[in-house]
Image: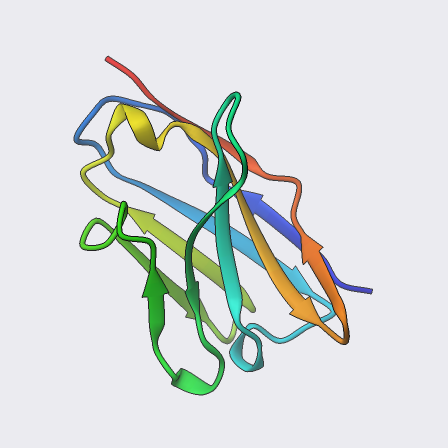
Length: 116
């Protein structure tokens, strides 16, 4: 059974940093594309970025490119979303997801609020 558990969200000020974690079970983060999405109030869920399997690199939405970095820890079987220079428009619930054996699995999400 695939399970994804996000953590690390919180309330921060503009310009601050946060690191979100996505602890996985039932899949190996090293052999899966690990995705990050976010959903702001009243908006549709949007793609943030992904880390590709087999060390094939990362992809990011234009809105976060240069500020956010996705990585993974093979030993901990965990993916990370490092968010720097946070802006109020980054406020959202952040989700990790993985496509595995024909199904898309999602975590429960973690709230990030950027406000002064």
